[in-house]
Image (cartoon, rainbow, N blue to C red; front, side, top):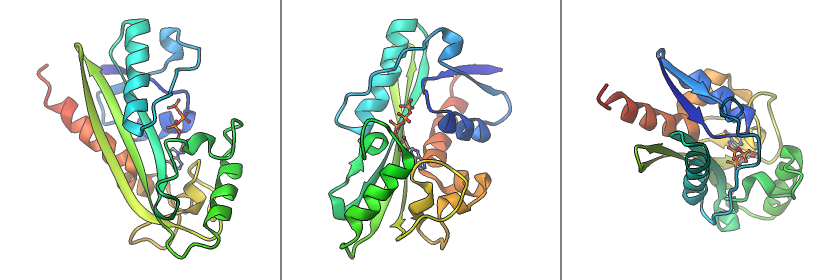
Length: 194
Ligand code: ITT
């Protein structure tokens, strides 16, 4: 069994990643390695934040690990909320507040196109590897659905008429930003020598 530390404090991310793991892979949490403080994420880019989180854990706890950073990039808002997706409406990091602010800021825009982007950073033997997953879509005019998390109730992935929050977990994972980044990461792990 290959057990890898996933450097996240977001239980929704952990749940989705666990759902995507094939047999033979397991996730170790930050708590299990004694990391209970907030891991810094101060980079101006999604990729930079993913790398910063993975390096923080590797350098302070002496274990290889992977971290991911995700952002929702909205075309008409010049890519916002992007790297600030978690704190878009303020430090309370509240999903409903974030969605309400985004819907308000898009109210007078005709272009509602957007994309979710996930970058996974994986440290291994002194090197760092990154894997990116993107899903294009549009921002709905109101929230629909109860599943998922974060911005899922207002994101309509392309070629679908329902939001991520209306999909079952398998359907979201198959086409999501995180699912696509994870597929690349798992393919990389697969070709490593034993
Ligand atoms: P970490 O500990 O991994 O950093 P976080 O919650 O701080 O967890 P991010 O910095 O990557 O995560 O913030 C991304 C925000 O974007 C997150 O708080 C959610 O609100 C949102 N988000 C991430 N993945 C999402 C998904 O699959 N669907 C909808 N919203 C998502």
